[in-house]
Length: 282
Image (cartoon, rainbow, N blue to C red; front, side, top):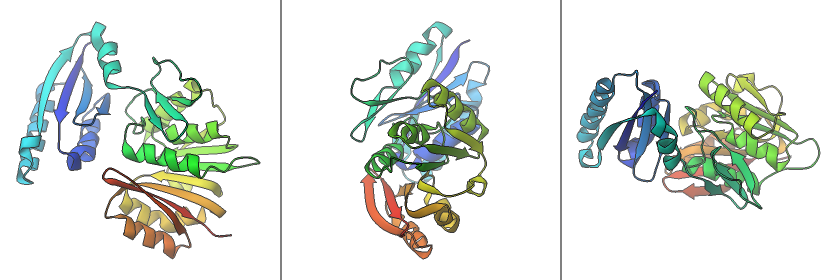
């Protein structure tokens, strides 16, 4: 089977919405690099339709005054070159003091907490600033020893749930509304040999009980809406790690959490993104 490869140079503010658009169009996976996106589609797809949609996106961006920053190239990758093309775009990445995120074909790093993530159609390979920030804060505020619990809300590839398990959390749950994410997380859990992680389909309302730490790498508007339910699922003395917040949007999230009794303990900026750690008093 051959594959269609689209290398897309896109202005930073439009990257996330374009990733979602490409996934909705049937992309097998989208890799985010510093200056571009690389999207793969099966050879059965109509590449002309994809190209025309990208031209429509260019027109939309042009109205925003950034058209000169948007361009794309298309190539048909023969079957024998697929693995080489995929591997060159997905490289290991370090996060925090101890984490290293690796694709399955890379050697593990000695002295590191290695997490093997198979890039698929789910969000969370560790290359995005919000994922790395969550790992930094998870490592910093880890609650280990005893019957500690962790909830990964919007688990994606399962990377944060896997990290929590490797840090020593005894009860780890990942939850996501996307069936593709549930499948990807399940496969990554097997690869990392952390079978005690429970993955569920659904939203926060399906997350039973309360947890010592909750990570929610979603969007600021969703975090504001979910604030009361999120607070209800945090144990007294527990931590919530919040990400997916553009710089400038954090005050609204902080205020929403404050109204539910969650106190800000840290702001962690990375690029255009702001992550937060909030705590529920005893």
